[in-house]
Amino acid sequence: MAVPLQKFREVVFQMLYSYDISHATDENMLDLLTKELSVTRKTVRDAQERVHQIRQKLDQIDEMITKTSHAYAFERIQSVERNVLRLGIFELFFDETIPPKVAISEAMRLARKFGTKESAIFVNAILDALYKSSLGENIDEKQLKHSFEELDKSEQIAKEASQQPQEPEKNH
Image 1 (spheres, rainbow, N blue to C red):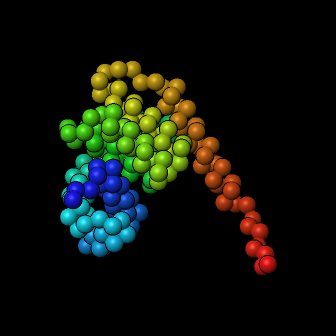
Image 2: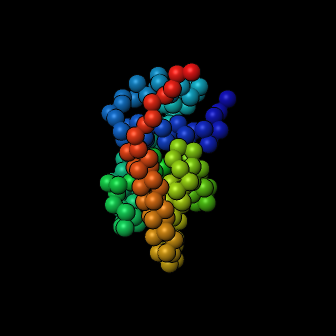
Image 3: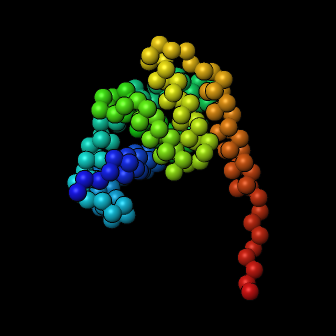
């Protein structure tokens, strides 16, 4: 039985993320994802093929992100958002079988699931700006700026929370 497209996207995203933060091999990913995500080896191999297609376009995709996210440096974009954007841009511009609205909404879903609400807003703003630009439409700079600010606030809150001293657990 074929895996649903949403699940397939999650496998692709997790592979992109893993390759981005470590130097996993295809064979390691095959065994790990087959076991952890309860998918078939064929699904993982198909996902690996999609990841290879994305990675072949990575310079072009990352340049698109950099140009659109000019107020938020590419290096600052967290791994989750960066790889959701990579997958979303690939589906939006290089996979003609996926309607643009589906590519954008699925990228937002992945950002919410693996990131935060602010991640989804950021991803939506970037993809929406890229898509509108490709159609020759004006980009809503206010929306883009707002999404950068929201993500920045979220990161600041997380940073402050991580610097708070932890109270020792009490034994009852």
